[in-house]
Length: 53
Image (cartoon, rainbow, N blue to C red; front, top):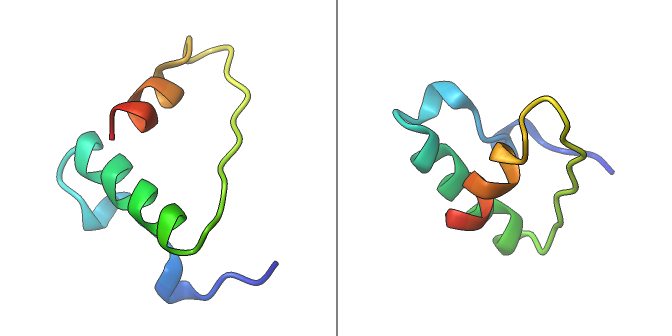
């Protein structure tokens, strides 16, 4: 898969983690993509933040 730089969601473009996860989820939905994570050190906080978006 090739990803164009205009499709990258960057932390610098957002002011809060809520806005970052919202922007990421909107991009994933718009491009019909899925995101998979495997968490151990974060205790599921990444998945929790994404599900709340």
